Image (cartoon, rainbow, N blue to C red; front, side, top):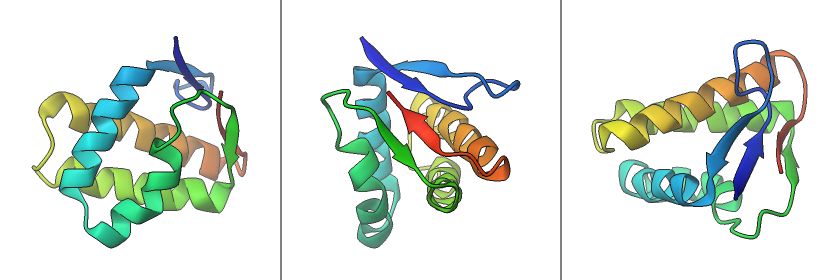
Length: 104
């Protein structure tokens, strides 16, 4: 079980992330970001039920910037930083295409 996240492949197709993997990224983000920045991401990473949701293109661009900042901070493990970068890339693809970034 896990999340299907849009725009996760170079062709814009979905990618899959386990719930536990996303939770590990969230834990890394909480340590790498300021309280204010983490509060902006919390609504995305606090979802544990797998209920589908969508993020606007502008919201996806903001999230991508925060994910990249955290990944580049040096405060995340290499694995969680790489996962954050991959999510940032997916969010950027959605924003650049002016599509909703969807998680289901």
